[in-house]
View 1 (spheres, rainbow, N blue to C red):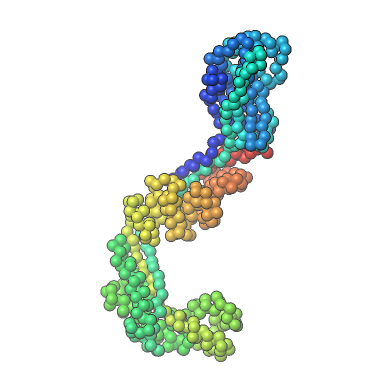
View 2 (cartoon, rainbow, N blue to C red):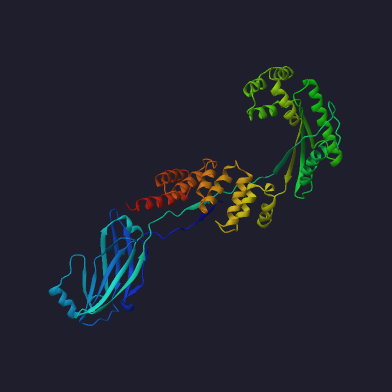
Length: 470
């Protein structure tokens, strides 16, 4: 089953608020709502004045004001007046269109509605009420009460993680190359000869690390021997074959592996290694030498042509490159047992992540806080161990987006494949970049491919896009 995680980012614009008190608690604001239309901002609220006690010669003035960082606009006001003040206004100072005059004691709830032209700064404005109380002689008190801090609607990402397939048999391998020195034209190994102690130690250490692990069973040890191109191809065949057989005998006598485990092969002359070196340098006549290496001329003639045509370069290669072409490559293949405990997997993940399958690394993330460091680490290790796996890249992209690493997410999404979940994740990525047109296209495609979360994501992005202040 897929894992879905949602991260709430901001309050939606147009939130409904109730319960703010005015006039020393005698007036209560209820059902406050601010809604964005196509070209206008609509403000509505109910002023519960049922508990208001006001003298006949006094009045309360409520003035809603929308305040931004630098701009502000006053909305129509409300006057709640005692009997004498109410009739005074009717005779002498009638209110203009949009403003409201109410007589105290007659109205229990004043339904306030106002609209004003929409401007860009309003997306993060604060709605306040300036209130003042005054009497017939003009004396009074002023106060300001904040009602609502508005925020534009934003996209709330929902991340869909996919569980990887179960790896029934966990086959792993470790590789290495040994550069064992043999006497000229000989195939015997002398353990103390030149650099042989360190080169043989490399082989033993590689085998021992795997062999001494109780969770591991070695299934094969492959050895492939190479000789360098100087000399005849026939003699180099004898040397590569004989030296490989000698190294096999050395390993078998040391570890007593059965013949079914020990596999050998040989390459008489390592032309591929020579090509790789020449191709990586600025050697004089580099391209001409590469052309000879690539040619179909038989090996002995090819080697002689390089030697005779480019003697200076040949001597350099003979001295500095050919020794490195005499090597023995080895591969230890092994099977690792399956782990089922999330705690054990997390422990192994810290020191030997190569022993874990993608599914096990997925299990390691379960029970951890989504978006937390350990949670993200499990998916990062998974994609590091399996860099080409589409599911590993998809999950790593989700983890990266969850922690705000959009640059890393883009890198992973490139390798996440084209399944519906990956298309959906690309929509999430585009939406987080505020590229809403691209996001809508990806979400629509993901919805057609059956990704249930895509429909809600598409709705969200459409609302956010339409809510952008011009």
